[in-house]
Image 1 (cartoon, one colour):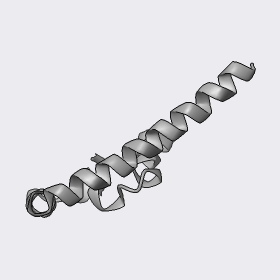
Image 2 (cartoon, rainbow, N blue to C red):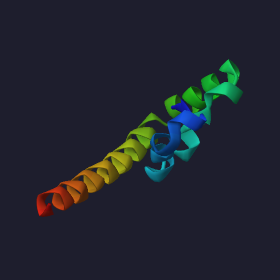
Image 3 (cartoon, rainbow, N blue to C red):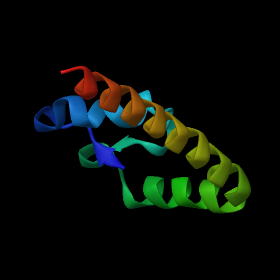
Image 4 (tube, rainbow, N blue to C red):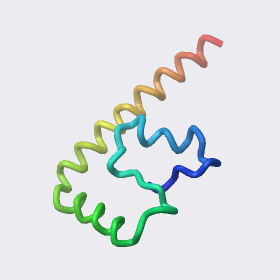
Length: 74
């Protein structure tokens, strides 16, 4: 997940909000070697990565539900 460019604004922040800090990098300042290293870390602990993703997706669900409730009130 590469971002952190000024035009990304709030969209770029969501990865941090979802707890994916260590899967996030500034694409303009990251080498192919760094990206490969990150993917290898994920591959080495694939089950842990899947659990981490599940936690993040639960957060997405919570945000979605909260947003839908707010819209219903309008």
